[in-house]
Image (cartoon, rainbow, N blue to C red; front, side, top):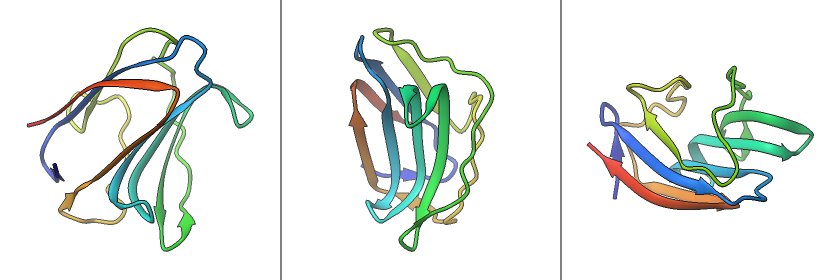
Length: 115
């Protein structure tokens, strides 16, 4: 599965009722992430915050922390990128296609759709 620039990626899932945080990683490899999205209920010193970043050349780039937090423990969420997204994050690596998807933390991913 790959995700190309201009396509719409929709991810649906449910954080565990006791979830402290989870992460969605999209890129070319674990060492080259175009998007690391980390909703934090209560983790890493943050409470109800979303932290977005990129990982390039062995280092994290500058964090982006959008306003608002629309996730709830134990309740379904739906993330659609880039159209209809409330979180706008730049394609820092500038690649035309990404084929690495990794989900971590206390979440059950129910669906991934690419159009």
